Length: 187
Image (cartoon, rainbow, N blue to C red; front, side, top):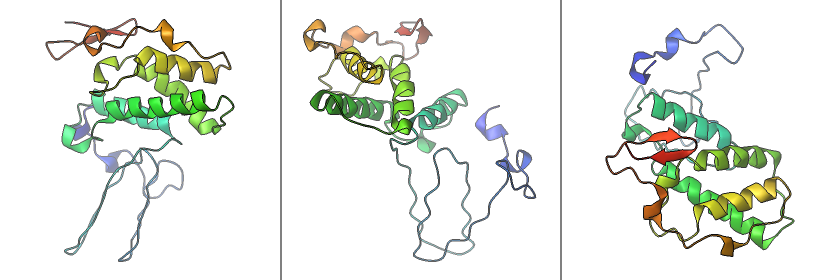
């Protein structure tokens, strides 16, 4: 269902102690609360208050962050409620991991990061149209470096990849594209 047609009180129980329960948390003045990725939450301030809130991405739950983004896409969540520049940030994150692996072939990452990187590289194959301006690395090269690290294969030679031309990635000029066999095609 669409986001605005759903009500959290219809989906959870205040009596349960399982994963489907509601938890009330009263936060004293001056305290901070970090909520895990993708937790649905609401904030109620019974009196005038200054509240600072925000979202951040981290490398220990990339898969869930990507799933959350896909749900927002599917439910057509308004942009003002989404993480800004999410797609572009995924490319910068991938570039950082590729750089780490190229500089240190024996770099170690956590199992959570590995699981997230598997999800990320599959997801990035569909989002080549959202590569940041000024991004100099060829997207297929970055994906190949990460994939090689995850599967313990030799790294690809950057010379195999032509100079990256963002206009050749298949931008959909009408503003709406369709996924087809892992590529975006013009409509």
